[in-house]
Length: 184
Image (cartoon, rainbow, N blue to C red):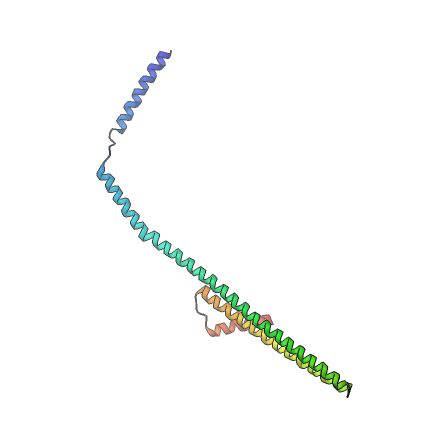
């Protein structure tokens, strides 16, 4: 039995070997085809590099630069708005201090006048307080109006840069008026 298996394996092995030799006998290394293939590969690599890779790389870099500039502009606009708000807060504090000074002056004046006539002093103090309140309300209204205008102008400028189109001045004024009316 073992001998029979060995004979079958030997005959099958020689048949397979014969078929493999027959299949691969036509395959030889051909230098002209090899060199032509290398030249073609190099040529295609150069064409793809200059016509596809570099333009795409350039477009991606330009897009990144555009996005970064928009981010930087928005950060700067935010910082500018914060500075304006800080300045306006300082003005409000100064106005409040002035109002406090005016109120304190009114009180001391009223105490001095109380000696001569309590009714007259009370009337004058009320009038000064009303003037101070009107001044505070006026300053606050001016501040709010200025703040809204600055914010809208910054938003419009930022929107102009983002959507990359020019907005006419009359459209800009119309949008500012609409926003101001809706906020009232």
